[in-house]
Length: 120
Image (cartoon, rainbow, N blue to C red):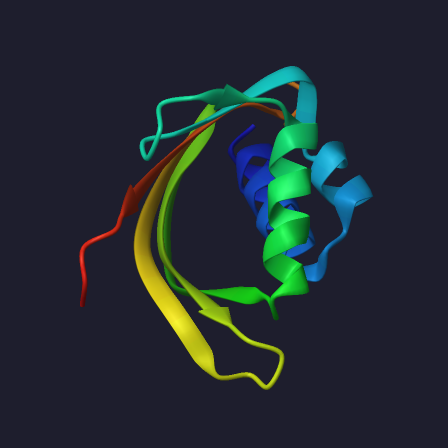
């Protein structure tokens, strides 16, 4: 099952940067919950997709410096998310840690995102 946790992470993050909404949905279980420390609100995958779509309208983003620990029932990933405008110029950069739970089918059931908004 470790492989399915890694596959779920790969599929979800690759789909997010590509604007592949069906790919994002394919990586998550029905009723999956997404949470972010910035506001403490739980969201559905469709709410996350709407937000991600707005980010892509401003130019897009990439994940850098990816470090991932995989377990049979989930993964923990640290990365830097770099936002850019439509010319490719970096507009913001944040350190992020994601803790995700994955079910027996290899689908994300919960994803908690911890964003470090401090400068630097």
